[in-house]
Length: 142
Image (cartoon, rainbow, N blue to C red; front, side, top):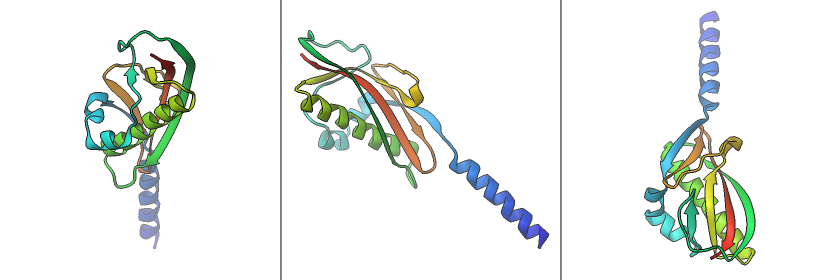
């Protein structure tokens, strides 16, 4: 009986540690934007990451943020992170349209309030059950 109780306690402690996983990964923006999922989900609002060059800003709404989460259960970190990144990008595009802007510039990751600015990669936190992306970007008219 004591052996079974010890085994159950050990398994429970190991599983709760695994569920608490929150790995931060960096993934390719370019690879994501060229997937069929991206082409079917994203709107026709240009997205510029980090310090990517773009035409002159004629009007700026200002900086906005989006924080999206998705179910990561039974998915690879990459799969869950790609899906949640697309959701976050679409949210930025929809907000730009609502505010009368036609592009989002200076997009950077802001996962757990940590800035990560890159023209080629984004950050995503992935655990056993949930994956999340936080983005900041500036809504503009070009």
